[in-house]
Image 1: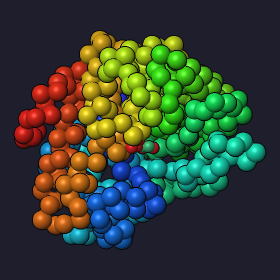
Image 2: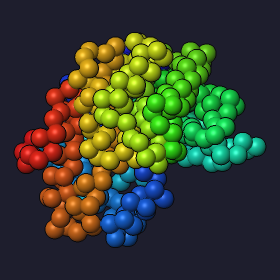
Image 3: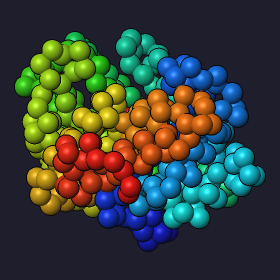
Image 4: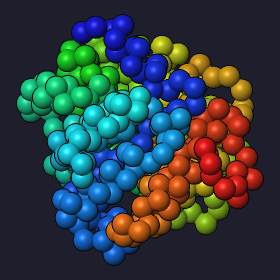
Length: 344
Ligand code: 13P
């Protein structure tokens, strides 16, 4: 493990208000997104869509890294250039999703278990040769009446820590993603999301320590502390920012080079506003940036709709979300930016 290389990569990803585009939807997940815009889920359409984002003018000002899916890291553009090479030429670091998705956890109704550790070292060697310098593994935690259980959280933390150790041994920065889902009707005041997020993060950092993972060479990709998606009383932007920071200050060591949030089903503008509010609250022990999937892609997908004639409009829609989120990462986002025309 070369900790200097890992730390340099992690630090570069979160520097100067840049953040990550999570474009690593599995073939099944992208099918759902394509269905919503009436696009057939073919390899060519997936390639055209990803190429559109990776070649969008000026996005390298706001996007430092892209998480790719196994198919995408091997694909070539319409002109025959490898997609990771297009990113590298623009100063954008390619990353790779290495988990193999979640399955129901045996004997633990309602809980999920992430697969993908078998053969991971070999796969990382191949991904590195294809250009990946960081990786992602997502563990899923559900809030429910009697969930999560101790064993569910333990399994999630151990899986993340094993993955992170293997990545570091292969000089790939692990993005550690313990996602507490937004599903549920809990309020923010009841502190369910706060409590669960705090205890999950405690377990995760404990496991990372036991597995000898160097915190200076990881990035944390967490959920925000937020009311459940079906709760009628949604918290204010300021409340989400304050509670999320209160939680992280307790449990995220200052050695972590950066926190890159997931959007988790928040609307595009809410995900941006929450990040902006946190960064307006002053200097924190870690840069706070983004690793959004849906909150960066919803707008371009709906502008594109699978039509070549819409590519420029889709690229503009993507540029706008990237620009707004980058401003949020710098604490400079204002609602007025949503009405401005984007010229980057
Ligand atoms: P969302 O921002 O859509 O939650 O996706 C981020 C991600 O990479 C989930 O693993």
